[in-house]
Image 1: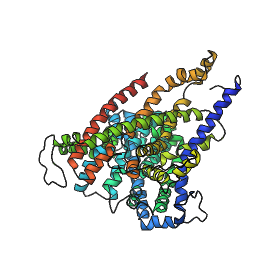
Image 2: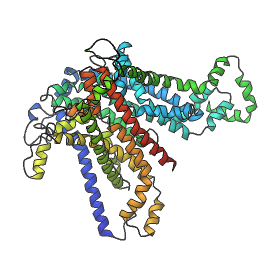
Image 3: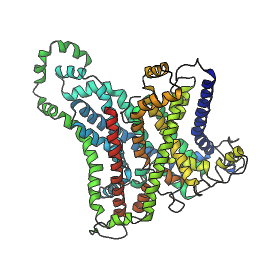
Image 4: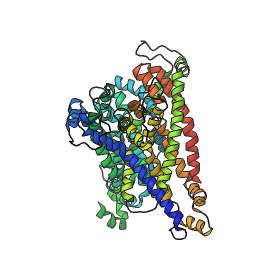
Length: 281
Length: 317
């Protein structure tokens, strides 16, 4: 652990081991992604050659247009954008409101906070059946609105707990000063606390967005012809094994670009996002 | 607003006068119930989409709710006995438990090894860090899809690459041949979630105070001993946290199964989530699937109780 000096030879061996392991893992991470991106621009004639074509001589974008238009990928993309954005916004608003109350007034003691957290560990399959039946009776089955509501609920534990941890770090004194100053509690929250917490809200929102963007199970069951999201479009490539490799890969590439970019933007907050604020990175 | 705060604190005797404006009847009411008003919208949503469905499903558990058989007659415990008596359900439950344990164990070991490699600064660390966390932002459906494409013959290059490395032809059907379909599923899960362990454990490692290692070095402790007597005990609460979070997600395994094997061949790769999906949404035995999901929930809540209790105890210590 300490700096090199005493024993050079074993340390060099350890360094070599480290480089090999890290290098190996980086290749492991990149190889399926590389194969996917390359397949998305490969002409169909390159699919089954031996040895495999690692880099197509004549890249083509026909699969992208086919995936987006023939397989309704564009509709899925638009639905995904609308649903994820709306759910993220709602979740950030509702989550921030609740987190502020929990952090500042200890509302409901520990019970309320843990009740919200427990929703995070509720397996989707445990509630999907009744939700499916309820969505049908409420006439929000296969609507974006229904999915937005569900995704808002799904990301609430994340929003609430990340913001809860964030608000508890912020000093109370500024809001107290504002109250003394004659501001209402709402004004102290809205004009003092929220601007201070803005970086945390943005980070939490990005994680919510990624969670909605990559969600599959709820969308699979609660949508069909109209409100289907991007991940569910991949079903179309399951039934016809064989010819649509390029289209599937083109759609996958389209889908992962935004979530990877967003993920990189909040890299600093990653530990917080993954542990719902339990750990500070 | 900010510029008003300073001067007015000095003359805070002015504050009551400011508050007592006539239009503040509503705002006084808001102030009085403020903490509950903030909590209300989120609480209502959780009540509507989690508590209400769970209560509703309590009723569905004990009646007939099936798209093939009309009516909602009371059937007692039949839904539960249907699930318990179904060998496919038991197989799916075992597979879920075994796969979850294997996946989480491999992810933990690899994640810890990566974290140990990355804890020191070195040139290129930033870019490697960015690459390692990429899988966390990818839709599990796409992970399943791209590994299926990479592995499966004749399209995927995996067999060709292995043949070249091993020097003899490899013809494994990764998604249809036992036991390789399990291996494929594990590869996909490990690929996606090792970074999760890595990121959390790295944060834990970075938080270990360096003076502990300095003290260990003064005592003449070797690197290996320092790992077992300093690193692991210091890291224990974080390890527990990472494993708890990961395990509770691992048991839900569905997307990758859906994309890679479709539960097949036969029912060989049914996880419990996939089994419930099949029963509920392909065969439309809704009440049987609901009973199954309650069994799952009860088993899971036992695990959660044990793990979370440990976690809270570890955090207090």
